[in-house]
Length: 513
Image 1 (cartoon, rainbow, N blue to C red):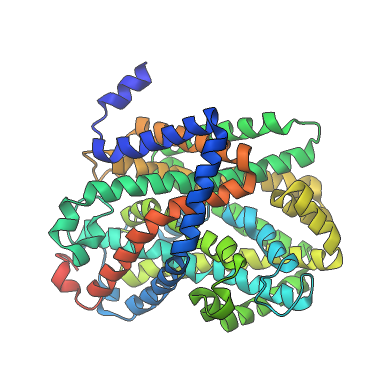
Image 2 (cartoon, one colour; image 1 turned 135 degrees about the vertical axis):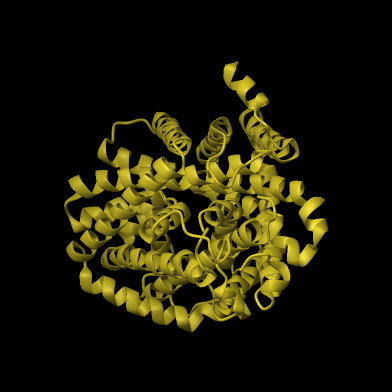
């Protein structure tokens, strides 16, 4: 009762908080008491999104990459976020650690081995080669470079930059509608503000639930691989509860303590773990995979990004490219609030370097190591890996790779711990931003938001994630990504247009530069 009273007493933006909260709660209730109705409704909505918005997902994602490139060379690139006298709160290493760990969540850990294997064994119908062939491996790495490189980080960087400039340089309120000012004018800052924030809160709950679902599956897979006698039906809710409690505690500790320290720990692990695998794994195969992946990416980036020819009607495009863009977009608006909030004191060019280019390079470094290792072992035993996918799911692939590399008794538990910390790091920053957006009076100076709201949103995300993976597994994760990505897609498209107007005439829209 005390917790409920605390929520009711918190000065929340009621039109922003209650509609998405009640909508998600209704969905959770329906899934529990009428699972057949819930699943069929979700499936129909997911099909509608893929049928009608697939092209817009792809075109908007590519437009954000081009916009990032243009901003670097535009007059806007020289602008300092917060004005010429603004100074950053974090040093560059801490800042980069927070940015990277806020954005990757469990994605590079879960999909680093699973996604390239899918492309290798089941290449799209528009390619001339069969699964398991050398050409399929090259295509697989090229697809990884597309899905985990410059494009997804442009999806984060564009709204984050729009938020930072709006709140620190244009003196607009802390709202996702503020970056739309060059496009919509005062109407967008007043009449639409609550609607936009409300819709994006719903989008992030879906996006976070999808990512948490992937993390739960992978962590549970590692634990079950270590202790095969454990019951999966008991393991999944226990892992879910542990993750939720951890990221709520971390977020409640504030940015200066919980989030910053956890990000630095997580980043250190990423670097150490990837270097270890690079040297004890199939090093030459990893280097070759990175080289061929880069070449294949440059060859196919336009056809795959813009859905040219047979790419447009391919089931692969919807299942992978559109799924990835939707997943990144579902996280992007709320994550952008957090990234924009900590960008104070940086120039726009510096911001794009640390929020777009460097994180993308690190992700490709990681994906080359784990994707290259997976493809090397899968090319030697394709049927083994195919059967593993079908019987144990994508979460089992990385542990089979560790079995081939050796030192499983060290690598497996270390990876499970990394999965746990990685999701907690990403989720605590998102719950921080969700709570900030839900509050009436939020101070940019102290950075931290209401603890009770963090707990409420964190519990709701965890409950939805557990329900989806229990009833639908990895397909449920993909459906949640698409549902969360659609409303975010419309907002991000508007912010991209606004930044294109802003970049050549910053003094027209900004009060400080």
